[in-house]
Length: 500
Image (cartoon, rainbow, N blue to C red):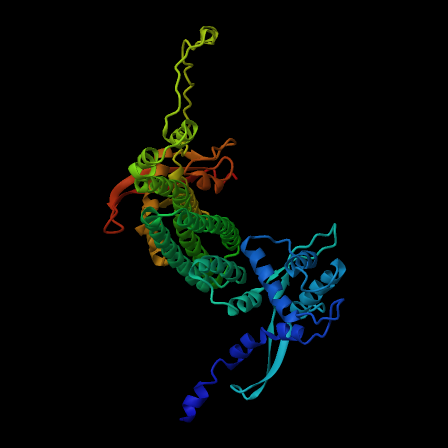
């Protein structure tokens, strides 16, 4: 083989060693020679893997209170007589496993090795468990899997496609915490693909339910599959909500920390992440509603179909008539055989006491309430409504940042600024034009002490100080910003800003 080809084989040698080193804590546990009360060796390697799965499952269900005591209880429940230890023994066992994954010295696990790529000694560090918030009252410390701990769990199994979205949510949170915004955008793109795949799977299951259920066993199997999908979607929806909150907090922090070009670029990335994550969250919310409909309507229709299939397969002449004619039966046995097919006795009656019941002579006219902003009542539009609120709030925030100390800015100047800074994606969205039309319709817009909860401009009002108002007036000339949209030029004036 050529020398260059042999040298290229060593590229990324350190990363490969680090992935192999992730298994060192499990091998260190395997080297322990402790025994139970019956002098039988304890399988520390298997118990270490059980501990990893325990912490991973609790991360999926968002249970953050997992410590040594909880791990000991889990191992004791899973034991079922395999290891002869008491409660104190299992707690000591759990503490040994936690200390193997997270050394009590506070230092990270490390491994020294000779790097054949650089031809010198090198080392790698990794962290399997990380400390979470503890309970000071009970002196408990809680733990969760760190980034390398998740890699170790993923390395032990090829996960099914339906779990990819939950895994991507965990990885996205890690990337946002570390400020890796480019990787976070790629992660969101993968989540979008996962949502589309799950949408196709739900549609396929719906069709299978409607045509494939021919027995009670098949019905129960599909029912369990649909319930599992619904439960996982509900957990993922909660995680999406937390991710959206985390992105909003990061966006607020970067808004006030923009000092140089690097921080400005990070702020632009987080705005794009906020927009794309909102779109994926909206699509996922639709999936959750589809799973609810599938759980109710489709399964109910399948159950009714199963009932009619049973009726059609029942031969009345063979099962009933032939039995009565060919076999002489006593009168009571004949009645028992016919009773399931007889109708229930019905009796129409009227009670004289109905004369004394309260009579409704009129219907109270409901007081008409007229709100300044119309509330959203359609359940299917609620998710889209929340995304619009967030988009309008983000646009208002960008416009106020463009204004600075000025009090006036035109729509044309805002569009030019977005194009110069690479944010012309806003001009392709309908929400940009709805924002200006709604502001003009509500002008002047000002913050009051009593704000409605459900209106589109709620997030816009949060960026205004008390006493500050926004006025939008039309200008001459029309703007054709894209081939699809055309809008009248407008002037946005901020009043009361200098008095704040």
